[in-house]
Length: 67
Length: 160
Image 1 (tube, rainbow over the protein chains, first blue to last red):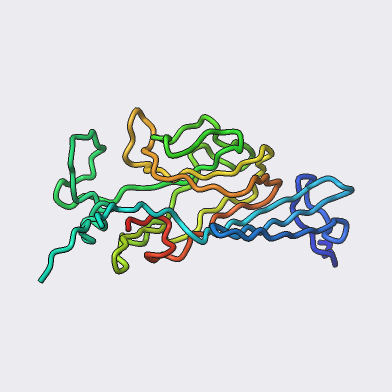
Image 2 (cartoon, chains in turn purple, blue):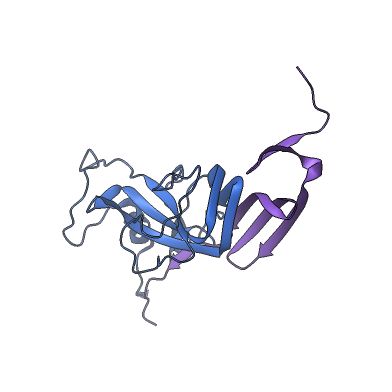
């Protein structure tokens, strides 16, 4: 069994060495949610992309109260 | 003493529990009329080109995302939080995130529909709420939606 020194990650092109990929991360912050996006590219092509949305605020249904 | 007009807080919470019935509706049996079982809820993802909004009444495959690793209908919510009351606001939030692992969703999506997968009409689960975020694709990756803090200020569904 060959033990690779370099970690591999699963991509749309199969398992690839991390070092051969360009890695980008980005955050989007709004009042309603925070989104984290992570992209791996190989020769300019997106081969892995993940996103995680953390909802900060749900929906409120107001009940009418006469003033 | 003075009386104050209000919607009773207990009533708001009991709406989540299905404790009141103002009109007739055709329901899927909850096993018992006096101690009904909890319904199941799901979250489905929708393309940015779809039309899912306040007028949506049931889950639909029209406009739903499709791709490797995604099953039509979406993912079941973990319902470990009983509806609760926080001062004047009743609230309910799923007790865990919903996530899709190792999926490829090549067409941009930007919405999630929460629906009741137990209570169906015409074979489709009754819609509860729509949540939106900026347009997104996923390639051989993961997507998750983490719930807000379950209280009267931020809970996923609130009746004030």
